[in-house]
Each structure stands twice: as C-alpha cells, then as structure tokens.
Length: 163
Image (cartoon, rainbow, N blue to C red):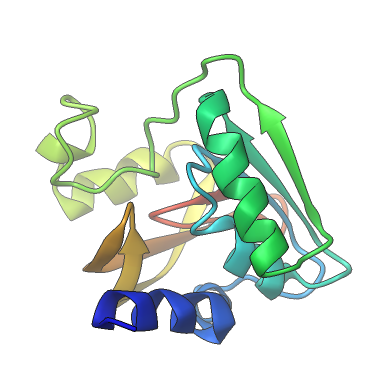
C-alpha cells in the first residue's frame, strides 16, 4: 500500500470524521453537501453526524454516483441520501481559493472579504481550522472557515456546506 492509499484509508477510518467534529459537526446534525463528487467528504461527514443525523449528498454528475455508492459500500454509513442537483453548481464555500473555477469568487477574495460575504448572509464566524484534508484525488493543507447560522444550529464549513 503506497502513502496515498494509506492516507485515504486513514481519512475514511476516522481522520475525516474527526476533522468534521473538530469543525463543529455534532451527532444528529443534518448536512447538505453540494458537489459531493466521489464521496470523499460524504462518508466522514455522515460518520460525524452519526445515526441520528443525515447527509444529503447533492451531485449533478451522474457518472460520479457509482463512485459515491462504492465508498458507501466500502465504508458503510446508513445516514446518506444521494440527490441529483439537476446541474446546480455550488460556488461558495466548496471550492478552494486556488481553484480556477469559480474565477470571480474565492480565487480573488481575501479571507476578510470571504468572512464578510458569508456574514452578510446571516452567518456568524465561529473559527478557522488549518489541517491536511482530502481534495479531489489527493491531500492538501487547507484552512477551513466555520460559520454558524445565527437563527439555528446550522454550520457552514469552508470546504463543504452543511445545514
């Protein structure tokens, strides 16, 4: 097993769950993950939310459904529902600052502007966590910015949207 395979195994066997817990996900949370892709966040998010919670994994690319389903079989969780978004593209906050798309969104915004943009939508800044996380088919060190919905216990994570 190479280093990348070991890191993925660790991510799905607890490190990913611990990452989401560290970022404020609690047992019983309801999470909406836009752009679920291959399920790299879906499984650990569902593990963090626990049996009393639920993860709605929204993905518009039907070709990726089989990859999500394969991860759900390999790392069984019973609290995930995969949904077809019909082509809705999540712009914020899913993407990393260095991503070429969306060009006029995070790539050109500083941390203060990102925080202000999200605060203007009714969320309160909670904290930031810098850690190595999975992104696409590898691992990167990223800062995840956490916000809490002011009128409820919802959480917005810098990589994933959760409600």
